[in-house]
View (cartoon, rainbow, N blue to C red):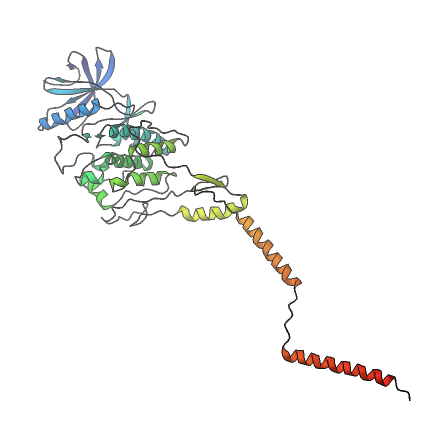
Length: 418
């Protein structure tokens, strides 16, 4: 049976224009004649590997059936027309994020607003035991209101699924956004999706792919070097992207943490975006305390912060903004320090380390000057007299005796008469 525009599926869904074509399926805009609503229908094509494709198609239906989240495309129905299985999905009127980006950078707040929705959707999928395995701009749909949805779970994998539809050691996914463990054919996890989202966000804020080139070049490049992360990005972004694209999956933040941090970047007053207790695996970081310094201490604080502002690097190689390629031993997590520590209205952020008090430069200088003046004044009042030795004492004694003798002689002569 031939499937195309105008085909009626199960006397209910009338297929319209083709919205997109994947490796084994086509997606059509369609009309639900029963409920009178527009939908999207994904139909499996005939292919030489039809049986394997059927197994993956059925797996996608099972995955979507167990997921429900505002950031995911909703599965409405499933069925078979002749030899062609199909899925009926929520129709998203808008564009893919790949079309929105198209080689240009977007504002960091906009990237954060889209990214937080995708991260929250991934958190929900991971909580349900699902790994997407193909997070990329083309699978992020954004409607006119700015609402984003993660689509295409065609190669998603259930973590607890014993039957695999991909051969061991065989890599699936889009080369430009694969995680290192996917390239090596190792086990995948939620951290795999976090890595891919990190590359997507890096591309969004820079306008360039982290790993360009052919599929083979792009895939294996991440095994030789970490992605280049400009330190000129807005505060908070370099550290977040470095953590998401860490080579070791254990060092990456969870999707829940990513969603929370992106929410803070998009809106500093934002609340936790994934409140579901089932998905919250780690507590939020403690809020740091702000210590206010008087105007006299600002200059010294600013000098220290300026010196620290340019400190950016990795444990075993050049800084992320450099063009040099680290050796394969660069498996350690890239470390990026934010290039612009907060100094606003003479405030300096310091860790909360107990009741320590801030000592100002002016107070210390004034105290030192007062102590020095007091010491000088006291020293001026005192007259230090050396202690006389024995010879000096003996000479003084003799002189005193002689003087006394002379005085006695004068008195006796004065009494004589001529």
